[in-house]
Length: 400
View 1 (cartoon, rainbow, N blue to C red):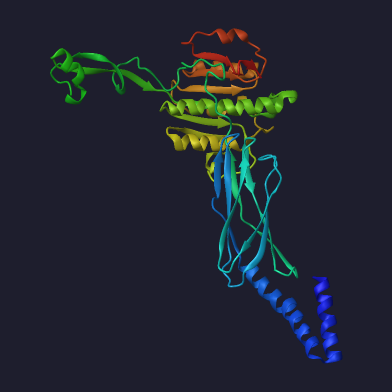
View 2 (cartoon, one colour):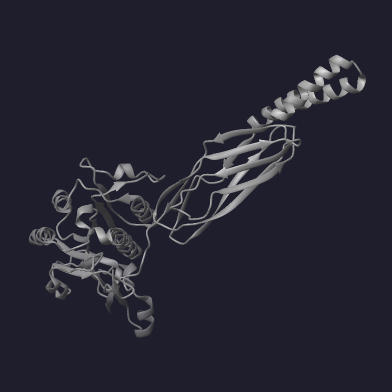
């Protein structure tokens, strides 16, 4: 731009000095290009509209998604080239910053796209957009920043119970009721001959056709168990040499348990002594209690599971709220017979003592140890009907 400005001044001086038509013509052309065209381009660049096609994207690790950026030129002046750079966290995708260069005709629209691959769990923000607009003659370049952002939520890894070396028949959800008062219509226990007073909706028509006598369905009598996952993210409970591996394993285990229980159609909640690195579009702030811990009440359904996974995507360890205190604060707020799943790096004496105290109050407790060390291995041999059980989480058959 300095060169064009210098040439324009020289030509204007030469036209005034020599007063010839060619010199005046050249001076007029340079004045128009340098001043008028520059102002028109600046006006068009300021009217340029740059927007993202999505505000939030949800991914699992190793998933890919396409980021679309829409550019619209509402002016009648074409833009020779528009270049942009999108801000991208390196922890999300190890690739370089995404750049593009496109031409926009007058009143034209263009969409530029690029792919990202989710590498690590977390809540990330793409943006801002640094935009450059240039003219056909290379006289000047307009630079400005678009404060438009897109949130990328990367869920923790979700494994099957078999992948975690856990038994697939854990007592989640419902249990048989000791007093047979309320039948569960979702659990067929058998058939029997019809008796006067049986509701017509309980008639088993296939069995009736097969036996040629009226048969009615018999249902199991069950009670629903409230299941709460307690995730320990007190950083001093994790060994410094395996801090990242074991914290990610704990978060992944909590996500896997929640996914398994909710996919069974049962209720599941989450509590953790965690902090958030960044909030996503899911309003996790409503899940905080007055003590500053994460608490999501037990519910059913995919949308509830999505909320739990979104919350787990942004949690990190903290050093101010110990895990036994979390159990003490929340453990007695649920109904008699509730099931508590404690996800911990190590079965310390304090945690096991808290678990035993909960069983004495009528709760069922299962401890999931994600670390490589088990302090009380005899608890791994507890029978399936025991009020407290302990399991060691392993990935791929290997303890991590």
